[in-house]
Length: 148
Image 1 (cartoon, rainbow, N blue to C red):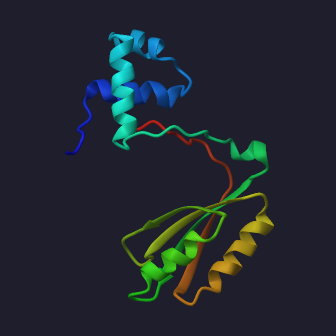
Image 2: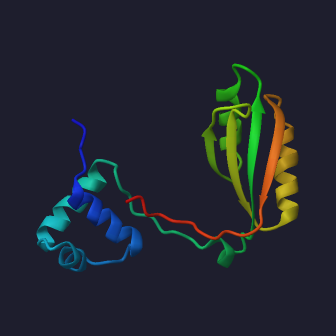
């Protein structure tokens, strides 16, 4: 049975998106419910795979200072093959299928501009890729984990 989230679940998610170290008692106070209610709802959110607990790294602070969004045209019937090959690239942090002339969009995060070049060269070696359009990210102004 699929777990349907409600406004209370959304409130818990919203509080944790702002501060993942917030205590259950702080969340309960902010949402005007008991700590036990928050604890049970939190467990349900985790158990149903709606939410996970992860450490979020500031990439700039660990030396990952360059990024690009890369649009990829892929040979017909080779999209799945291309995705499997792209998943092997450590520097690729996001892969999505898109509509329009480019079948895939990938986002990379690397230490330097030279690393962007090297990644593009590696992507160009994939036989399923027919065209590449790269967009270099110059500065990130917003990167949010809030969905509600």
